[in-house]
Image 1 (tube, one colour):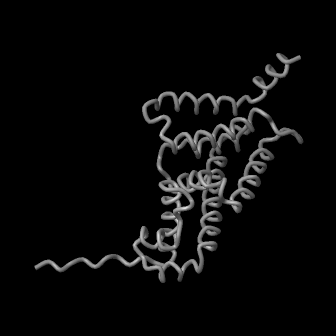
Image 2 (cartoon, helix red, strand yellow):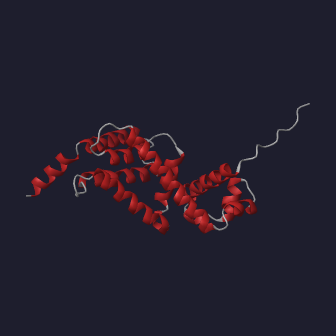
Image 3 (cartoon, one colour):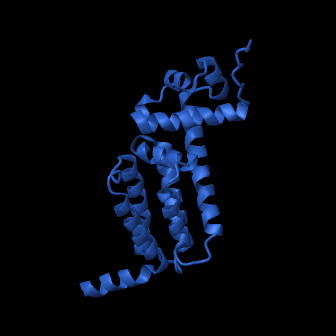
Length: 201
């Protein structure tokens, strides 16, 4: 006679991680307004008391979500930068590659969830600004922010939103062409910028 398997008990850190993942999933599926303590507890399969043990308030839960999601995404970018031998546009290219990654990685999903809720999430606004100027500063030549790299950065975030909306579901080849074109710009970001400036003169 087989005995019924006892569900595996999560460790505290694993539970916290699971709860943050659930927050991201709720934002992606239903929007930030859907993130209530009751909804998170129910979706995570824990009691509300168990949720409050890890996060004493909705505010602390969302603050941790922003902190963890931002740190995870930035760590992913740093790993890509470290493996890229081409210095020109390297940080912007890492941003693009991380977002364009077709694998449904946790940090990318969390970043997209943060982007999706950024208009309602004041804490993330500040982190997003800091992240943007950090990437631009890393790739700057002298004191100048390269306009073409800034455009690629913004296009990468737009790509994330388009992915979220399923814009390329029936046109994956178009998505790949967009990504490869943006990446090519990061490797030689000056020629386009120079040609645009000269055409206006």
